[in-house]
Image (cartoon, rainbow, N blue to C red; front, side, top):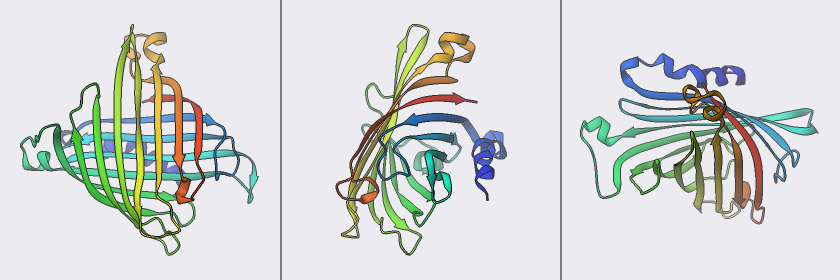
Length: 250
């Protein structure tokens, strides 16, 4: 599948699922501009992110595709792509009854696939947890085993991925603080460093303020912070940068 086809599939894929199986779904496009990126074709770059997320009868899904443009010409190109697709199969949904153990409200089989240019593709599999924590709209904690699918990909190991969101009402609008952490805390290869990637966004619901209540939750503007210790598993490369973002939900 070419990249354009993949973008379209991400946006319309929930429509292909029977309506009575989908509880809710969302598709969005984000424009991001930032500087001071390490191990990149240029320090400054602009990224379009196509994204879909949803909840269905037996679990949930999340997928995104990045199309990143950099300044200048790098090996005859001015852009690169990267994407991930993940799904979780919920124990409580499959069993048909709630699974509550203290703050843990569900356990899932968590699966993910990372896809990029070059030999960077990896399959991830493990256990996901949903937690009910104060002040969080949601908090998920996924523990994965990483398994590369290429001969020269040395990223095999273990990864912990929290995903979270917090909502703060402000007048007629809302400020959203959400994001993820990818922490590769154990690596199989000695020349692949364990690394910590913290990527939160702070966004203001501009649509609700400018266009009214009927546009609430559609147009957001804000900042993204990106801290990546030992980026790509390269020891000593620590990325620390901010980007401005605009995000539109269809």
